[in-house]
Image 1 (cartoon, helix red, strand yellow):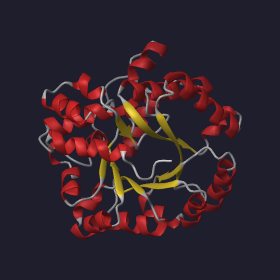
Image 2 (image 1 turned 90 degrees about the vertical axis):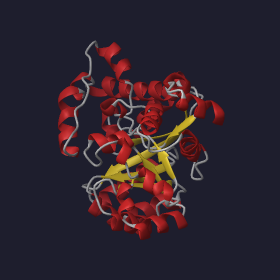
Image 3 (image 1 turned 180 degrees about the vertical axis):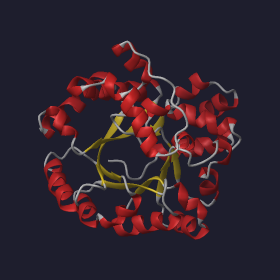
Amino acid sequence: MKQQFITALEEHNLERVRQVPKGDLHNHITRGGNKRYITAWCGTEIPECPTFADLGEMNRWNARHIKPLLPGRTGYEKRIEAAFVQAKSDGVQLLHMSVTMGEEEWFGGSIAALIQTIQAVHRRIAPEIHFVPELAFLTHTPIQVTCDKLELYLEHNYFKSLDIFGDESAVPAFKKVFRMAKAKGLILKAHVGEFGTSGLVKQAVEELELDQVQHGIAAANSPAVMNWLADHRIQLNVCPTSNVLLSRVANYSSHPIRKLYDYGVKVTVNSDDMIIFDQSVSEEFVNLYRGGLFNAVELNTIRENALTDTNRK
């Protein structure tokens, strides 16, 4: 597979890149879907997204152009289907995909019904994919409320990973939540270093005892932090197109993933919000290759990083 992937990149053959196994370790279940699948179902085309100034602008665009097409429980289930369809079509072999606490409300508040639905879709559409269910929560939820809800989720022994997103400066305060998840053996992740500082990346990893960081690109601003991440074998699950379209970096050619890689930080390439950004993992690899940031051999190493994920459950 190594040589097939390298040759496909060198020939700029996206379809052959898709055929090579890869991982997607940074993916949100309600936003990870294939746009064409959704369009075929609802009969309305989702427009190409612009470059956003920030997350708020992206969320408003999503609320205007996508959410109305997928209302209620039926719409939620269709999002799940679209996410597995997308992963399968792109040759994703290892998929970490997050459900946000509170989404059980689409199922009358039943966590069991939510889990059963995801399991059924996984079996029906892409049983060959090694799926790691991930639970995510927002920083604006009070810590004790989050702990109480997490306890209910953990009773089902289904979720294998935990993620937090929202206000990055608030992330390190959620020690109690992450200690609960660690006691159950979950992979620990956090969205940090997308908009925040390099120091915040290191603080979050230390305080929460993280295994992986979602984004983490701000670490590239500090050689000391990059060396520390490399020494502690902390993996950064990077989403290049997300960073470009959220105005975090100017273009693929200048993306800090190159600097992180050169400092020995373990990085992976992922899709983030596919239904918005419309760039698959395979397309991300092609974008980085065409941008001149990596050669094909280096990109194969990054591809293999995801598939040799030491934290897979």
